[in-house]
Length: 160
Image (cartoon, rainbow, N blue to C red; front, side, top):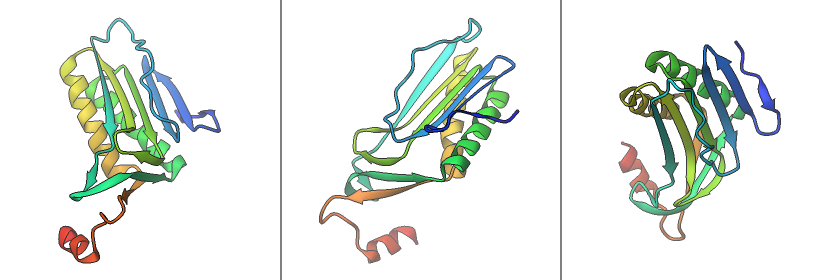
């Protein structure tokens, strides 16, 4: 099955397959946890918010600029969600990733997984975030506070 955009302006995808609900959203809007609506077989719901920290490589930042190849990002997120559902027996996967400038203390990611048991839900959530960071074409560029940006020598030492 191919995910089809529910609305073209926001890039949300919605799919139902064998009682799985999968919603993917890449958006400029702050992520919010929707009301919990699960089937009776779901005994665990795990929500995760990824929050922008106040420093990057030990230097204070104002926030992070996130950029994405939206179509590819949504495609990869859907593949990750489907794989997680299959591997961990999930009944629901929601992944909302924000793009644009996100200030320190604000959420850049919301993820919800629902499964019959808590251990699978927690493991699936960890796996999804790890896979997202490896595979999804969303790039981040920290916006350093004035006078706090690392110099080229520090960046070279940190990366080498």
